[in-house]
Length: 240
Image (cartoon, rainbow, N blue to C red; front, top):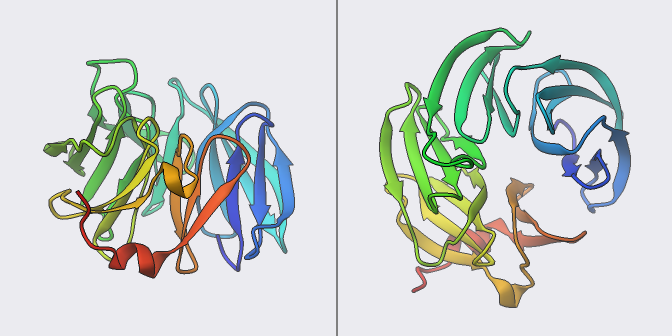
């Protein structure tokens, strides 16, 4: 998000909230349903997945959020990324590419072996790979932009993979909802570098992780965010 703000989804209250650098709520926007994933766009806009088949486009103007417009699709919208003037939208089993006006370009990937094979997804820095957290298969998948599966990895410290985030340091941070952990993985081979946070740090069903101003922010069950130094997280040594 431009300037020094961060937008977060408030699922149960059906809102998107705008936080400042001190993590204080400075604005919010009411939605017509429960929000899931969101992504930042250019021109001070963000796109939000709303439970069902809707993407709401919100605008941020001088620290104030307003509802701009919405797009409707033929499948559930769970997570979204904006890349090269395209929307990449996932249902719980597939990832699609759309134009910014909501027209389908193609289906990139699909896994119908279970009902929730995709929770979140994220691109690497040069947008040549996509990382997918798959709770039903308890794995982290890596695919290329054509949808070819390059890797599928599992880790005993990661149970119920959920939210994930890719950093410029060749790391993937992944939440384990059921293991109450956040892991840092090597982006090149998904080898575990560190257990960044765990239950003893206050984690309870973590489901969102992101980087913001050199900090690692973890969203979890309840109303609390956990904040860690990103440098300290990256500098941690491998943990068994």
